[in-house]
Length: 96
Image 1 (tube, one colour):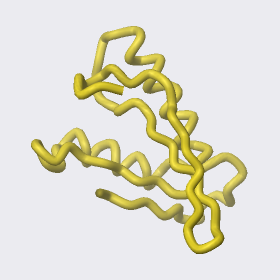
Image 2 (cartoon, rainbow, N blue to C red):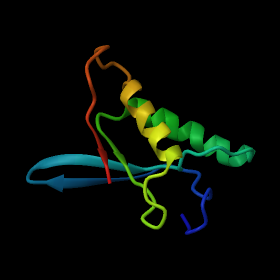
Image 3 (tube, helix red, strand yellow):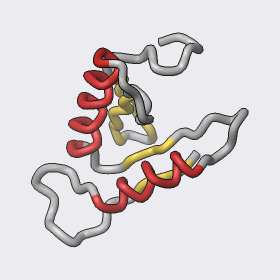
Image 4 (cartoon, rainbow, N blue to C red):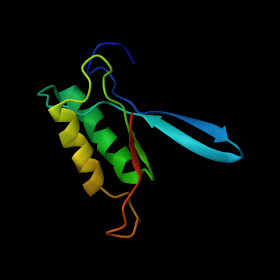
């Protein structure tokens, strides 16, 4: 990972223990319009991670704040459901 937008390719995950409950946090490539083939591969991996997640945490850029593009992505979170989840059951997500 670097400070340069569009350079994250692989998902990076870490387990954390919070009061006896283990959580796996996964940092993925950002989602934005791009024509770069390599960046698109990272975004495809992000899409697979989203489908598998129980809860999503969306991190917006602190310098730009929440943009219209961010709102489009967050709206997609509400529609996407993880594999095996009952259809129609809402999934929690957090905007940070």
